Image (cartoon, rainbow, N blue to C red):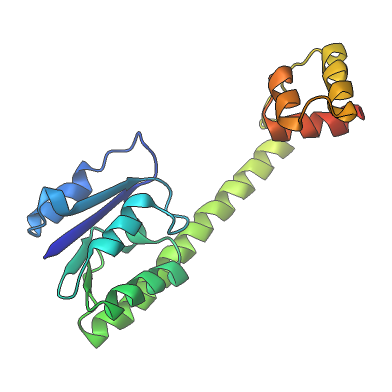
Length: 188
């Protein structure tokens, strides 16, 4: 059986191009697993379901190796799991077919290249932010305005143990981590 895996990074992105590529390979709709989540790790619901579903003799097809994993270790781990189950892996973009020694070698090379590209993107993003900060164009998020007097009252209740940190954050209208950061900033 041919099983397809599709991934886009966000809900807003469209997966139609990938789906059409899989259908052209003979993958039926009911055997296409789609995640709309970052590929930074393998904790993706549809990926895990697909890996559980596939059986000996199946072929997992994806449009590109970057759709199934963003780093070499994850990709090789997934392919190793598939190999243990006697499941083939095919990546259309890179022309990889793990049933051949050449295909397994190319898989390793392309996985390393995909990881390098991802790391390069992140590095360029960090550098761009640093340049923008230096030029005064990027200042991060605007601080949340709070009523300091009311915040200190909430803080007193929290310190006295009459309310939990979660309750205090809720009363202040802040997320828990923001609440604790403000406690430190205001030294209350």
